[in-house]
Image 1 (cartoon, rainbow over the protein chains, first blue to last red):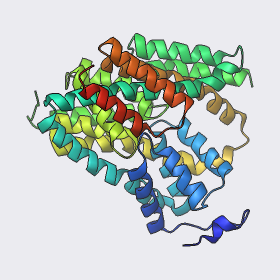
Image 2: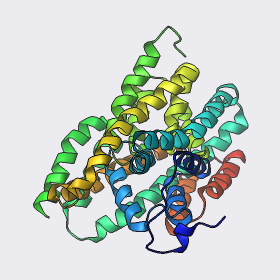
Image 3: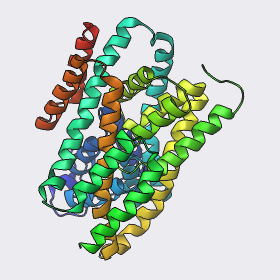
Length: 190
Length: 179
């Protein structure tokens, strides 16, 4: 299957139909182990050519700072841009439908077999690795922030970490205090 | 354990996750400490081990990591709980994303837009770091488990390996009974 939109750089990207949107996001959701966003990028930028890398980054930045799961926000904004309300609806249905069905079956299996010793041991190992996976992600996110020298950003991140992770303050409370301070500091230093 | 007496648990799931949805800045992972606080410490829906099992299962399943709320909902109130928790967790944020997404481009050059974007980066980093800490504390009961966490973290940072391989190795270490 040839895709002319990929072949001609700078050409107006081809507009996805609703069914193409749905099928693509189903594809992203079922292949997205350990987070779906890298797969979304592959599908949208590399394979279908629906967006340039810059357009993708722009929408991604928005999806990141909005509350809620990043890839969920991304599919809403992306679907909305190409198909309005129905576009957003089919994108999110494709993204969440199959994983929710699969994980519900897994939940049912866990309810029956969760007490089996061998399964418990395997899951203990995987949870230890899953914790490491987030630590790796945190390190990747932190590097550019801490490399910029003396800015308030690392301080804000550390305060948030201690408040939520160590002191276990409720997340809404911490955000209501910390987010305005951080935005104000960014405004002052702009 | 399970409370099947009417709509109480469903309302609790809906209420908690709808609020959490709007405060999950930094993605689903950033909300994990709050999920743990609610499910284990406040509501006693599950113990530490069950929570970290569910976190592991959500990581193992295809799709966005947010589906851990589907598992929590299922654990609390079956299929209805799974549906309610999932819809509550994504509904509000989808609505916000839909309307902000439509207008955001108009403010492309507004200085406050840049300030918000810059200011939210360290906040979300702090929240995701807190998640790493909470998940590690729930999962690492001994030194070998801690070593698995550290080794996975270093590998994930230094390489672009598919996480499923790391899970496979860690699962075997766990099965062998070292953890």
